Every structure is written in C-alpha cells, then in structure tokens.
Length: 106
Picture 1 (cartoon, rainbow, N blue to C red):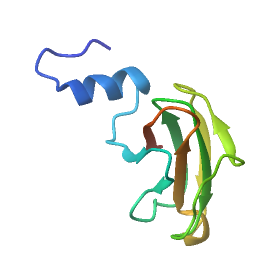
Picture 2 (tube, helix red, strand yellow; picture 1 turned 90 degrees about the vertical axis):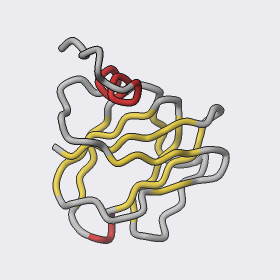
Picture 3 (cartoon, rainbow, N blue to C red; picture 1 turned 180 degrees about the vertical axis):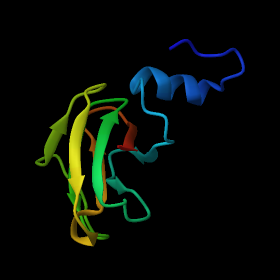
Picture 4 (cartoon, rainbow, N blue to C red; picture 1 turned 180 degrees about the horizontal axis):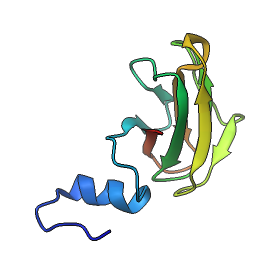
C-alpha cells in the first residue's frame, strides 16, 4: 500500500513496520531502563514489533523486563494474547540500542 505524500513520517514508519494494521498502535519507548505501556491493553490478540532488538515481558501494571526475558529482534512480528489485567501490560528494554515497541490490536 503506497503512502500518501500527506502522511506524517510517523505514519510512514508505522506502515513500513506493520503493513496492513490500520489501528494506531500503543507505543512503548525503551532504553537501558525498562518501560511499559501506561494503560491496560484490551483483551484479545495483539501483534508486537520493535524498531530495534529488545527483551520484553508481559504482566500486570508492575511488570518490568530485563535482559533475561523474551528476545524480540528488530522488525519481527510476534503474536501475544491478553486475557485480563494479569497480563495486560508489556514491558520492554533494549538489547543494545534504544527503540520503540509497537503493540497493534487485532
């Protein structure tokens, strides 16, 4: 799907990372310090994708990822399931370079 000239650079980045997903993603900017989404995700399936390699962990509002958690390479899509508040947050931390984790509802 071509990107219109009017699209912002952020929209262009989203389209490249996750073509076909129309809903705006929840974004988590991660660094050497873990970060997580600020509100619970809706129950159901979500696709996550990161701009750089990272480690992530799904959990409740206190979840904090570290370097021993699930590894997600840059640009690779992974399906996650949210079944309630016990796993409605996703925390991410960089593997080596800071980036953004995008969470797309399906």
